[in-house]
Image (cartoon, rainbow over all chains, first blue to last red; front, top):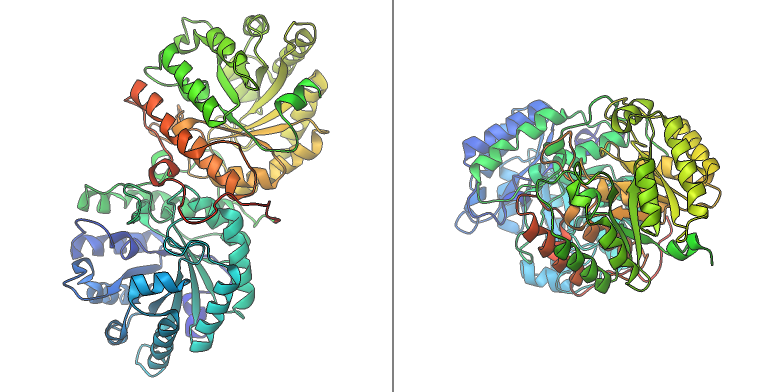
Length: 320
Length: 320
């Protein structure tokens, strides 16, 4: 089994906890390393195996990620768990390779405008950086999997509409440059399930067997519906964050990432076993809630609990 | 055009505001008639045309519905708007017919256990009552449309699993008894999109052209995903409540009905024009929020607003 198949087995759904990275990007205060450790360990006990633990960025700008190396080491000690981190420039990529993270996410914007505004480089330069990281990964000790995280893939808060063919072309360039995995992000929560299904299917078809993940935001309440559409379109890797942590810089008070607990419930009702103990998972919300009392947490499942009396974990996958 | 086609044209999606009925069933305090009037009038101005305004029940037990006749008259004065109310016993049905409501909803439980616990009658007796109401409607001045509202259709908090064939059989009995419209309710928010799609398709197929509606609760965060699945399965009538008002007696703090605003957004992204002004709609939340400060209101769209820069109203219906 190669490294990619080890991290993302094709025969099951993988849910990635991104609350420790995307959930902490905009918060006023952030959890202590001790609390983050507790969060990861308890989620691991509940069955979570994929943790995005931070970004390699200057500690001065993003102090919430200053412990990213500690968390990578923590995850490395948990049997069968995988760590992931963002590298947004060459320095970050070098640091990520040294830290022996399991997965490096390189962000490539779907639009030229967002690429320049967000990262001060063109899309072409972003793909070139991805290529360098992929090359360096191959000769590094840990040989991390390299993910091309395509932000604004479903619509852009700067450029507006994003055409499906543009995204498919960009995905091909990323694969050509050496990306192992493609991530599609509805960064600003712009679209509904039909648009998500349509692009996901096109990208899955164009990715020649490379795993494709969906990173969806619940900004306009479509998160779970979009995740369902992504699964129906052949996506088998979904991002979420505990309590839906992770707001939107353009909409104060807006919902953040897809709620991890609700995502687990969705997958189970659709006949995709997640291996995650839903009741144990909902109890872990108490950690970020206590550490960040000024943040809003979302999600319906945590309030109601899974249904009693019925077998809510579907025994088979429903055909569409 | 007959009465049913007038209320539910088959060529478009109809969204029913049930906040004034289902949203008020469990609240501690409730809006004044003046506030309800304002709520209805402003939603009408925003484009909403279908209002479930109460239940015909003893005022002593359910004082929140004591103004049901006033609201029916109010809706009758709004051009192209339709009122609906629940009748849970013979007395209620007689009152509903006298009040000249446009639509009478008779509740039939999917399970014997819930039928007896909720309404102290068997399913057979509930269908018989529906038959009497349908007969009386035909000879009444207003000739209201009669809806069979099948509660617990997707799973029951008393009996547990509900088999699809049982629901299909019950639906056939309701149609045989004279129901004009079938409503399928996920009363306790038990299931996910695949189960919703599966049952909705079976019932649409079995209903011989009678309109079928879906009444979904967001108890476990699946509301919008389930609504999307219902639309994909051929359902063209969906219930929702402003701000998702309407909790669950079995889960304190749990989410209520599908959020009306998010539902509008979903339909528009799927290429089903609703005729509803989303920005105007979200502003109306202020009315129930001010009248019921102790209630929790839900929904993501109201916080973020519709996306800027992109054409979020899909111009065509996406094929699946």
